Image 1: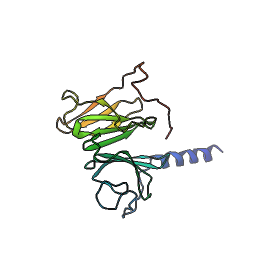
Image 2: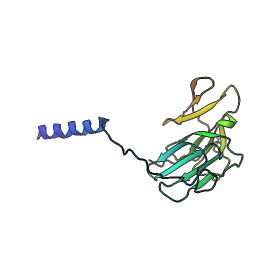
Image 3: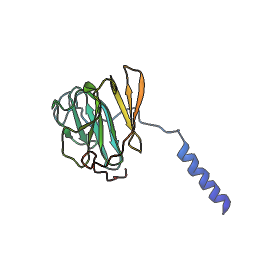
Image 4: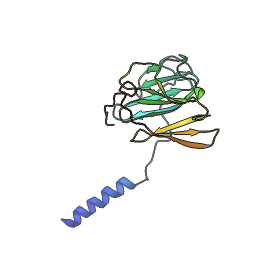
Amino acid sequence: MQIIFLLVLIGIITAQNSCDFNWSKIGVTVAGGNGQGNKNFQLNIPTAIYLNPKFELLYISNSVGNSLIKWKPSAEHGTFLVKPNSEQLKFPNGLALDLYGNIYVMDSGNARIQQFCQTSQDEGGRTIVGPTKEQLVSPFALAIDLQLNLYVTDVKLNQVLQFKRLLTSDSNDICKYKPLIF
């Protein structure tokens, strides 16, 4: 009995640590593919994607279209979260979601990070970092950790910056955090 348990445990550990995976050599279009453009069935220089595996949704930033779109893989069209050329975003590149479903967009052309709360319908989002030269000069990509600290690449300064989340008691200043559990 102990030997069987040990063999099963070794098999589980081996499977979890294995990098011996294979992928198909030909990709399948799951979003866009209808020429470059700003319609809800097109993409316009997509530069970042985030996949929410629980809800099977892609979040895509369109750098030239200055938009953010949510798309179910293989659907005919997506839903704009920020409409094309709305002047809310300028060359969005980086994209991240936290475990609460809030979206963070690297608004590179405006040298800032915009947060779009999962519970809000505010298309413009809110600026949480930037746009002063002391904060960001030429930001490109971002990531977020479980404590909601942001990590940002600045390609002109050749560095990665960390912006720690500050706790606040002002309920109007933060998203209503309700975990989605991915």
